[in-house]
Length: 273
Ligand code: HPA
Image (tube, rainbow, N blue to C red; front, side, top):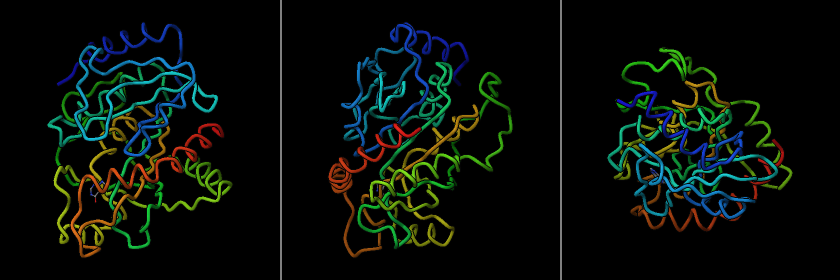
């Protein structure tokens, strides 16, 4: 169980490195979006391994550092690389950086990921705004004693993903001629991809895309009252949709192929905020 003094020690360390810079939003860069880190002006790099109580990011294609600086005219904090439950971390550990960002004054979270398309209309590298999510796994970042510094014991989950931010994102996407879908993100821990039978079950349950991240961070961010935008890049059709196997390399290649487009759109969105 992590204590409030651990969160505070991490935040104090980062605050000292930021030298008065005050981030207003946190952008978690999933697969394909990592390159947005290069667009930050006056960047300050803080590797996770330098921060007290932080865990290392071990996932394929993920660096492990914060970048603080100006992005699209906004005072931003970026996570280049995130943690996943499949790396052996608890959800509390995965969500840890979100709560530290909250202590630093961040009140808006933009979280991105690569996901498998469950809804057949999501083929071909589509972007999906997350309207809601389903998590049927037992782990949870809020389990254990509640830390009232972050939020209440029983947080409401009715309006997790800000409608206002989704509308803004769609407007910016339309102005760039980009189509964006909207749907339900179904969380699975991985690291194995799903079976075709699981994907049929997920579809029947109302999932549109499936992935192995984002939900732990979102639960913690909603607990502390952040405005949240979630965007999935659909890198592949989920298992069994096509008669072919899935591979991690395919997902990374597809994420990188769509990367420039996704980065341009995200930058325009941050500018419009
Ligand atoms: N399943 C789970 N996670 C994923 C997938 C998938 O098909 N593609 C990218 N992340």
